[in-house]
Image (tube, rainbow, N blue to C red; front, top):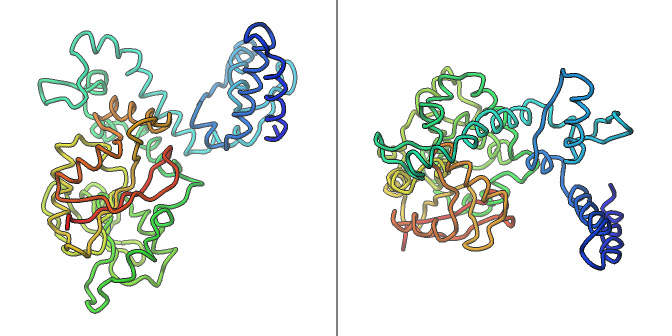
Length: 360
């Protein structure tokens, strides 16, 4: 639906709904819903509601499709006739289908048993092992990352989803203008100087993205991860990038880099663990020169948006993780001898980039 028409329909329905009751009120709510659908991007619609159904009898499909068409994933052309739209085509791509499998296959069993878990053990946000269990561990009988090692199909769904989750959004090095903020002042007199270290960087996609955007940026680019990831490179690193095996709970071997980058790492861990590995990075930084870049949600201290708040609840149930508020980030970084220079990014409902330095 055209956005202007949707706004006009809401205005007309609001004028007709004098008492907040009856059919006029129903039509106002429906007009508001359609306005929301008109304003959403296809990816936002799928993020809000995922639904799949196929291979069943006509009546069952019709009953399911009443909900599917209401959510805006496809159009209802006529009675029991449905038309694919952009959202429909998007949801069957590997990344979005993987997201649906990841959330529904894994979160539904947790949600269904959450009350029983709380009755039997109490709710443990950050369980002390082995006496306490997270909701995930209580249901799946193993840790989050252990589960993916043992269930390769779910690992593939997860990886497909992670690969597209931020598609259409600005890259981290656009949100934080790395090339204009940190390349100036880089120590180009040392041919071994490191510009950027991607800590726990998996396949190095973020370094590749930066290198492709700024091929002439000086300095070494290093991606670090555990052996289970670095061995997959087979000795062949992406062009312009070095691969280094590293456990971030041990001392950081790269000293005095211009920047150390963590993407969606801290939200997997409670403050106690984050303090350990961020302190390892802080000890490797050079005061007045090095920067720590953390690419994660920075929830407002009050009035947090639904997307970040929902992700926080998912992290709590899946891996005893947490999406932090601005104040929580300040406290955590301060405990490591770091201070926030600036939070980059204009949207609080998506990840932002925290720029931090050693406290002067």
